[in-house]
Image (cartoon, rainbow, N blue to C red; front, top):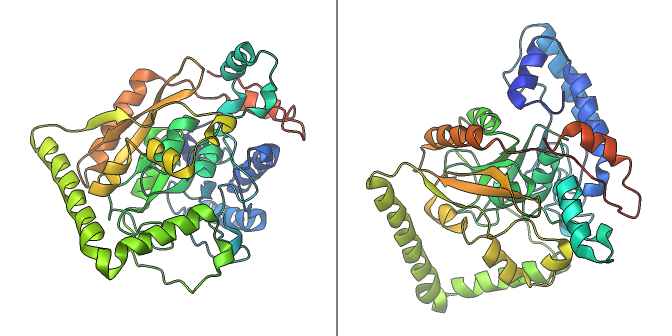
Amino acid sequence: MLGRTLREVSAALKQGQITPTELCQKCLSLIKKTKFLNAYITVSEEVALKQAEESEKRYKKGRSLGDLDGIPIAVKDNFSTSGIETTCASNMLKGKVSGSTDGIFGPVKNPWSFSEQYRKKRKQKSHGEKEDSDWLITGGSSGGSAAAVSAFTCFTALGSDTGGSTRNPAAHCGVVGLKPSYGLVSRHGLIPLVNSMDVPGILTRCVDDAAIVLGHRCDIGVSTEAMYAATRREGFNDVVRGRILSGNFFLLKENYENYFVKAQKVRRLIANDFVNVFNSGVDVLLTPTTLSEAAPYTEFIKEDNRTRSAQDDIFTQAVNMAGLPAVNVPMALSSQGLPIGLQFIGRAFCDQQLLTIAKWFEKQVQFPIIQLQELMEDCSSVSENGKLASVSLK
C-alpha cells in the first residue's frame, strides 16, 4: 500500500480497502525502520494516530474531507504546526511548540545512497576505501522532506522554496518537487528565509500527486507575515550569523541605494526577461534542476556554504526572483546510478498548464523509482554504525 500513488491510496480509503489508522500505522512503522536517514526531527505519533481515528470516523459516516483525508504527510520543520514543536532545525527554537524534517540530529541521508546500482559503482571505485561512510546528501533545504517521500514514509511532504529548496532535493532524491507561483499558495505559518521569494513547496513521487496536493492548498486565504521575538545570539551558527549581518549591511541607510535598490532593479529585469520569452510563443522552459547528481557527504563538506549555495541554486534561483511556477521531474539515472532531474518553468499562475506538460514528460521517461519492498527488507541490514544496505530499482 505504501508504494502506491496518493490518488490510488485515496481511492483505497474511500473503498474501505484500508483504514486511515492502518495506513498511518504502516507509515509510522517504516519511519522507525528508516530512522538512520535522519529525515525526521519530530514524529508526532500520538497526534497522527488521533487524526487518523477522526478521519476513519468521517469515512464511516460518508463525510470524507476529500482526496487528502487520512493521507499521511510530512511537514518541513519551518512550518508552525499546532501542538507540535517547530524548530527550523535550530537548537535556538528547540522546545517551541506551535513540523518535522531536516536534520537537527545530523545530516539527512539520501535514500539513493542505498540503491543497488550506486553501491556497485562505489564498490568499483572505492579501491579498499570505507564504502559505508560515503553516503549521499539529499540537497536542501527541504532535504528531509524529499528523503521522507523517496523512502515511502509518507505520500507527500511540504517543503519551502526560496531559491530551489524544494526542487534541488527533489532532483537528488528522485521525486517530484513543485514550487508554485508566488502568491498562489498561502505562506501563513511558514517561517521565512526571504519573504519576497519564499513559497511552500510540494514533494511527491509523481506529478499527478503534486497536482492533487496543490489543488487542496491554492484556495487558502491571503498570506500573513509572522512577527518574531528577539532571539539569543547563541542560537545562530556561523552561516546564519553571516547571512544576517550581510543582509543588515545591505539595508543600512548609506547602502540602500547602492545595493538594495539596484538588486530590486536587477530582479525586475530578470522577471521581464521571462515575460518576453513567454510572450514570444514559448509555453514552458526546460533546464537541468542541478549541476550534478547528489554528491557524497565527504565531498560536499569540502566546499564552504556560500560556494555550495551558489552552485546548488544556479538553475533555480531566477525562478524565485520572477515568482514563476517550476517543477522538478526525475528523468533518468546517471552513470553512477543516481537520479537526474529536469526543471520545467511556466508562466506566472499557469501552474496547471505546467503540471500537464510535466505529467506528459513523466509518462514518456518512465523513471525507475526505488522499490518499496526492497527498501523495507534491507532496512533491517543497516547496522548501528551506519552500514549501507542495497535497494533495487524497478
